[in-house]
Length: 197
Image (cartoon, rainbow, N blue to C red; front, side, top):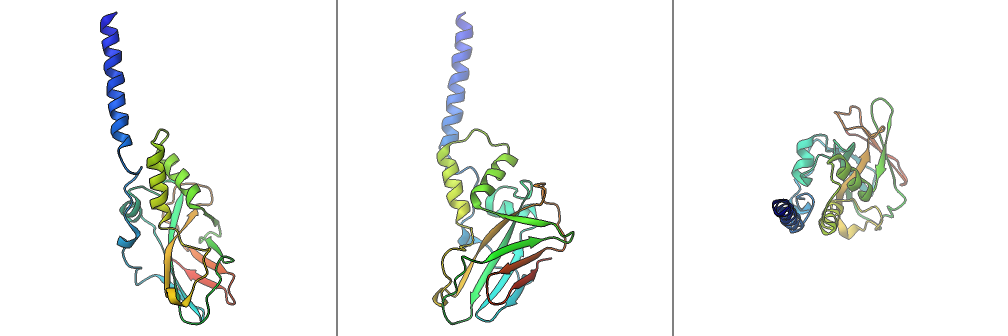
């Protein structure tokens, strides 16, 4: 009976050490700071609507999302789209009423989702069930740092605002080379249509 106890105690000690080591990690995934994100590609779709210019580019490959988040967002059925707004002068622009819609070449609509929902999908797709709550909070904070701010008015002094908008695939399936993506933005005097690929 003593050897069984030693084996159980050894396993418990090993498990404790493994969990303690995992709890020392800062985040569930290693997230690159937004300041280190590469410049918007020159090929990004662009449209000038007078007081503001929009540019957008989808992150279509696993390599692009792995570089930023050390996670495959496409596997989770998510498509991040980089969005940039440049203020061309004049008054502050109220943007919280903007509505963004992504449609692919087949006519299917991709749903814009919050960072919180995106994080849950990433964790499910990666099979993460047990985790340190502090590591999740850190990952949420680092992931949200990339989120495009659609709440704060866009002032001329800010000049440029950029971030990611996360869309979920129509059937929540993994994203595999979607074609004919069109991003529509309504809520300004002139609607914006950007052909992303």
